[in-house]
Image 1: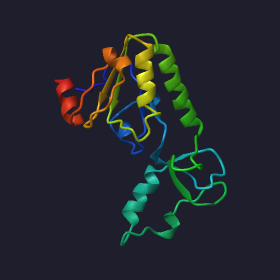
Image 2: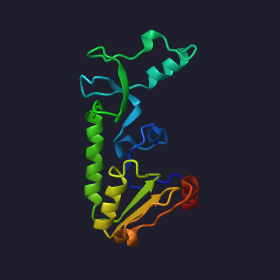
Image 3: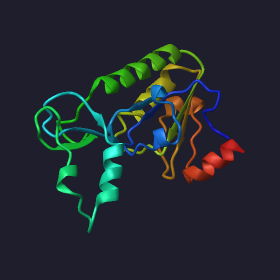
Length: 184
């Protein structure tokens, strides 16, 4: 049973491991705001564009010997010739290309459309590493919309502000166990 099947949903994630796409999440309903291992960008960056890297990475894996890839497979920027790097928000060189902005706009539109309607904000495994990206906005939405239900799932006990206790259901357990219980 797919949790998202026949649901109007949107996924915001700080994970960069491409797992949402591999799990079948519709790319038009996904905002991968911290980047994606599946994309290259110029290491400088000389331009604001990313490039799908799956075919190139698979070729690297297939042609490697002694944990080394052939020199000709080292990715270089098609514009300036500098090395390519993963599209990850690790410093000031993170590329936010047209796709990134389109996903940001789709997410903002979704939130705007449902800000005063029934809404479930399922927060899976979000801790306090970067709470300003998902956790605090979800808490604020739960505070501002009495019809919103904030559902954090985390193995660690997460403090919930008193003001949103009435529309929060918190699970402090193994995520897989909680998800299996919710789906059965």
